[in-house]
Image (tube, rainbow, N blue to C red; front, side):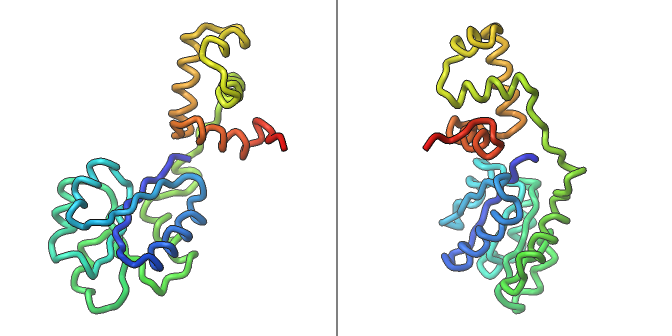
Length: 190
């Protein structure tokens, strides 16, 4: 399953902690969350991270701004609604999450919005050779050492590395290590 990038603008630390907790339950390891601290930087942040979903505290968004954002970036925009007094702006958003929604309701809304069912976004599995290369990467071997150990060319190792990162959408050794441990490709020694 591909990684879903979410940009959140919500000044309340309590609310943002709850939202992040629910999002991590819903999407587990397939989520990357970015927090927007200064609302004036929203456009640069959108261009920098290219989020799939932008969650905005709608009480801080001016009328017409979401339409302006949508013209510059075609992600999905979700209103974080604290009260009903801003309902005139709701038609600008793709979806609305209220502070009264439970985790299951949030999951349903985001799944519908992003079409995150298994058949829509099948997880690309690694080949046996890619798993072997991944294990050696995690063990700290260089491309040359991996090529020698597995009796393949350095170019083939490079291709496998690129395919692994592309399939898993993981681009750091630490991330690959976590993946390898969680998928029982390597064992953690005590």
